[in-house]
Image 1: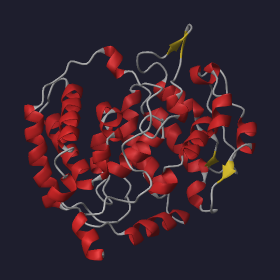
Image 2: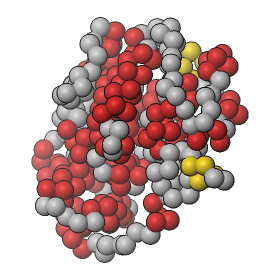
Image 3: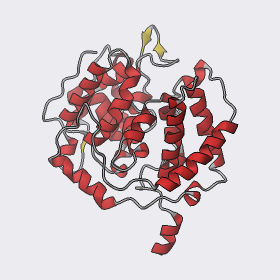
Length: 327
């Protein structure tokens, strides 16, 4: 598939799943065929509001730069792209929960990026004699779709306006493939504590890092069934007005920087004491968790996996005490 050229007048829109499925052919997945751009645009629903945040040109430029920078290492593009995609497409969680937006981005704006990044990246991606990018990378749930998973990784693992933790998270494929889908990362201190443990493992040069991340995720998620992390480590209520201001600023904000991290919404940092308390607990859980040697089949993305886990509609986990006081 050659580079997709998007007309400057094309804005991000919502592409219905049945239409996306109709035109998602094996040829498109293999990069041998371009999707019918005009037909897809006509079948799409315009997003509410005419703000600059729905402009497709900055997104396309960002993806072109990612492909140029990481031509020798596709997976490394995730950590660079996640915060910049989030800061370019500024929206609420409710808006980002619409899979039709991501369908449009994958099939109209940048199908070539999906193929470049995900073609032949894991087992089970060969159809006939052709390597293909799995269908779930074009139209899948938030934790597998090529662009949704990056936006949500930046959203769930950022610490207020700092994307540094999100970069750490997105630099590890097991964080994206496993942890991103877990409900526990709805709680900001839990998400930050997991990233802190990951950073420690990376800094110590831990071998078979993926096995450790999966063991950590399993242990933390299992313990979360009985330990109420949001009670043990209370979160502060984020400033939703600041989030809205950040979204509105997209109308006049400059393009995201390529050599430094952009600023996220200034809706407040996660309480440091809450993160520290959980990080100590998670390090102990990790130390006691058995490591599992992963088989190649375990690395393949399952096309029939239902979306689950993270709440993509509510803004944040509300601390129980704060909710009681509000009543």
